[in-house]
Amino acid sequence: MGLIACPGSFANMPSAIQKVDSTIKFVLEVKNEIFLQYADTLCVKYIRDDWRMADDRVAFLSPGAEHLWQNVPFTLSGNILSFELDLKGEYEHWIGIRARKDNDLYQDEYFFYTLEEDLLSLDVFKGNVHSHSTGSDGLFPPEKMPFYMRKAGFDFTAVTDHKVFEPTLKAVESSKKFDSGLQVYYGEEAESYGVGINHILSLGASSSISKWEYDPESDFRKRAEKVEKELLAEGVPGHEAKYAGEFEAITSRIREEGGLSVFCHPYWKQNARYSSTTLLTDILMKRGNFDALELGNFNVPRMALCNAKVMEAVRNGFAKPFIGSSDYHGRPSHDPSVDYTVIFAKDASFASFKDAVINFRCVAVGGCKDEFPFGSFRLVKYALFLMEHYFKKIHDPLCAEQRELLLRAADGEEGLLTRIAELKEKILEERKKFFGRT
Image 1 (cartoon, one colour):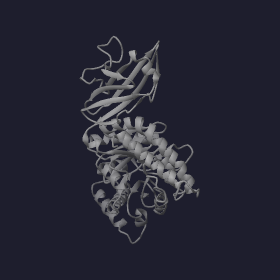
Image 2 (cartoon, rainbow, N blue to C red):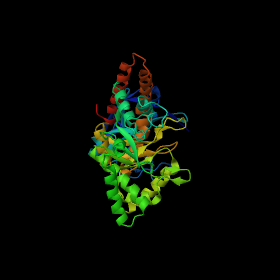
Image 3 (cartoon, helix red, strand yellow):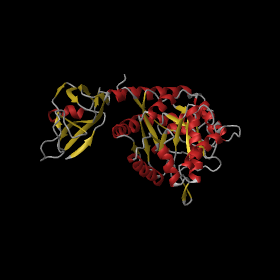
Image 4 (cartoon, rainbow, N blue to C red):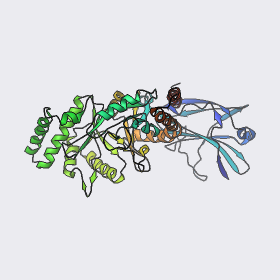
């Protein structure tokens, strides 16, 4: 017996996101004649991700077990299929509607996720906040970099060139020309004075951290030496004490400028050595004077080491949110779409992004060819559902379509502004529909 997928066979399906412990009444218009023609074989099946049915009994997947997936009672009047389900708990739910013709099963399936109120009230956005333009060592100009990010389905992004702030200003100003819905944050990648042993993303700060760092009249050196002396007094070796001092001078300044500091790619490798000594990385992780830790970054060995270190550090009390980002430079071999951050927030503004990260309402997604999320179990589980059923199927294709228009408009082509704005509204409309905000 073959199983034939029939997507779109039913209209008026409720939104994919629902409140926990809801009784959902399904009144569906049958759009596919096969389900009407073979109505006498019609059945509705249900299961949720903990193997439970609506009455909390365990449902097995194969004949000969205790029982199969739940058969849901329904009525079919004309071309209207009606049934009712209790969606209990914070789970993913599956509904399969089937009809049999000879030896084949025709099926349309639908997926739902039920949420507690704290997540139900929030929308979901994703973005990459680590990228480089021709302002430092990237291949695309800062005025266009945000639009390359849009193709990957990103709702927010930041140009974070090495030790310079001017490119991010250009990126933000360029994005304001178009009513696209893409949020572009101020950003910069700061680093240890002169040698770049440690790199820190400055996100949302009101001015250049590197300009302050390299200004001989600033208090950068004073701040760094204060921390250095404290660490030397504790017996920390001179190399580690010096660069930990510089690291914390930078992160403290980012905080004062209203920004978010991210310790990025801690196991960045230069030739046969890691840029930062393992002892220095351990000290920075233990002291925790930064806001978030970057995972992802387009390099599986690098991410594997960071993940291993995090697992060790958590056992010793480490508690920092994770940022997923790609460190995108525009190279042909680099797929920016597999490294990003998912936030659970009211909107995609920097203020909402910062609030979501600080309060651990975020998931870091990283990998090389495949996406792999990191974070709390609850949020990762929900994010996996969204990655499969919302972002890839609905959201990202619309963003990719808009990206092409944005790049053409940035090159001076006229007559595209209306279509760009229409796609923004379409993305918003689909988001409202999926999350039940209509």
